[in-house]
Amino acid sequence: MMTHVSDILHCQKCPRFGWDLYHKKGIHEKYFHMIAPFSALWKKYLKVEDAVSGQTGDSNADTLKKMADCDVIVFARFSYRECRTQIPVLIKKEKGYHAIYPYLNCNPKDTETLRMKLDERIALTQGISILSHEIVYINKDYVRSDDLEVEKLFERGSKFFNRRNNPAKDIQECLDAMDIDLDAMINETLGILQGEQPSLKRNKTCTAGRRCLYYDECFHDQDLPDDSIVFLTTSQHKLNAFEQGCVHIRDMEPSLLEGYRLQYAQYMASLNGCFLDKVALSHWIDSVQYPISYLDFEWDTFGVPPYKGMKPFDVLCFQYSLHIEEEDHTLRHTDFFGTRDCRKDFIESLIDSLPNEGSILVYNMEGAEKLRLIQLGNQFPEYKDQLNTICDRMIDLSKPFETGVYYDNRMRGHYSLKSVLPVFTDEVSYQQLAIHDGLNAVSAYRTFEEADPSQKKKIRQDIRNYCRMDTYAEYVVFHGLKKKLKEEEDA
Image (cartoon, rainbow, N blue to C red):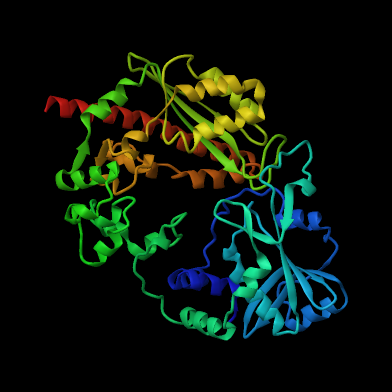
């Protein structure tokens, strides 16, 4: 059974996760859009474009033969007991080798130590001694000029970064401090991968950072009641309570609640079906002024800046949707869709389309649209004041839900727009669309340039329909909140 070092790492993280990745082999969309292969960029930076390279299927003998005739090899492939690995760069030194690991991020952490240690041990089984290690990573402060300058894009060092993203832990010291039993780890991994799909119970790693790819398959949350204890937000005790048979949030011992407003709203909703803070919601609604602009952006994230003025991991906005509601409640719609470097056209179209007064309702603006406008203002200073004015007029539609001003059990612990919309209507749904979520929209957008004219027309329309649904959903949710408040006041 052929395995890879990555299988060991995945199984160490979670046996079920490792098993699923190995057996299901799903194709997962890359988070970052890369115009050029990352390997081509770091090879150029390290000046190893012409170095000897390992190839898929190389045996240990093939690799050793290549290494005998060169001082530098990239993608050196080794295996031990049918466990394969690939080391990005090996440079021959007097008594061994120096390894270099490139990373598509700005601050590699010491969690990479185990990968390097496994590589080191597997290489040693073939007589290759790796004496020192180095990382190559992205310079977070790099700003692209007309051309991409790889010598400024990358940095290199011998330290891992700490939680504050400062270089702190010497790589070689981390490796020297780690002792592993390679055979035992391979045996453990093989035992997991050759067996039946492992059982598991919920734990914090399932939702730490980004939710696990297989979370829904593992736990089938759709079968739980809407007010399940599992959906209690920011709770340190819910998993233990769930394991002990606590079903509903209202069954949780109150002393175990941490006291957050959203937790209180969920607890009260579990008792009564929903919760509404009339005073807070009335105050929030009164802050919204006509004409109301319902605004939403779509964007793609680039690991390496593709255009002048952009920094690593900047986003490029390619679509906006805008519904405008006048005081007489007439509703009109406009939008923008652009390709390639459409940033300036995006800005100018947005400024021209937005009314000069009234509130701009945006869902989760602090973590999304507002950040995008600040970034665009830095890239195009001539528009900065106008974009800042737009930001000043924004009101975050997610706040009543995020802060527990309004909570309905049907939200099931989430307050994304897609989670909130069904609470207020069953007449419109994202499931009616060809594109159901933002990741689908980005995936479609990435295929646009290579598509034929008929495909382009469909992709453009599908993305426009999706983004239009977002701003219409904002309209529905806002008026849904107003209706709920009036019903509560009338009652």
